[in-house]
Image 1 (cartoon, rainbow, N blue to C red):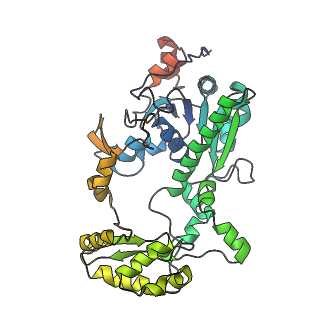
Image 2: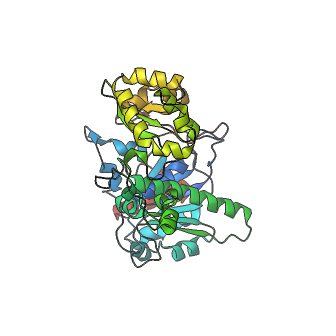
Image 3: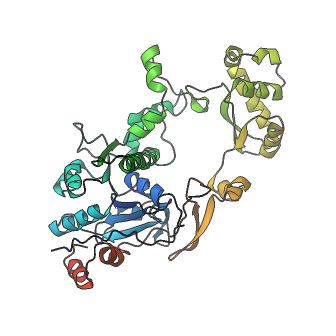
Length: 412
């Protein structure tokens, strides 16, 4: 039998003592992107996150994307600030150990299929019975209460369902996905937000009886594109693709332009006053742009004039003049631009951290920046099962002999 004595203390990390989420205990029975990103965002702010992976093969995210000499790079960021343990959830004893981790935890994060969680006794009713105060974030493709509850779901399908892909691209071209895992990432952000909302309720409600957060992959992006449904409801026509100018832009100047030295820059406006400044830069009569209606009527003219203006100048020259004229513009940043940019440097947004495989590596800092309770990055993605002994001994109280037996039987 598994020793079910639960050590309630927080595992010591190299995280600032005042980090906002220090002491929050999270068990992450999740893989790839959406669920683990939710845990990762909270780990960056001090939460103790135990990432549970299958023995031998581990999380598929470990071998995703580019690698350097066989060392996969994305995992070093996506797995950072977490402890990795291995556990075979197909075995009864593995499920018992998972329940012990649930007893220890404040939060359980998962994104496996509903039927898989039921088979493992890690669905909401089972988790709630084990720990009535626990908060469970369950990410699925289509919602745990729909007819598609057991259908496989990936972030790109969530993006497609959200309406965002339909809106992205040019009118004469195909719908376009963004260049990263947009749906998964926004779901992770919504997941972290919803977990902390539930924790707030737990800490302020003496009758708190746990919380089950049922989050589908399309719902975060769907919420953020907040004007599309009301526009269709009231106008009878779905918003259409409008390129960089957007289907519902707050002002008519939004686009990208190629400079004389072949550098793309973006010029944008968010208010009528901002459009007036663009018009003044281009030598247009002020009276032609002194109200929003006139600005929208002349949007195509401003766009063409801006295209010609930027095409006749280097990017640095155009951006310098625009800055003096209070026209909002920026070079389109690549990763190279990001790591060299003075503002990124002043904000400390690119950090360096030692990695056992790659030496010193650069990655994003812990966000958001907080004056008194910010987080830190204390490790890159752990090796598979690197924290088995510490977690199973220090948290669950298992003996070294018991751990050896479980390892021998393939449970961990």
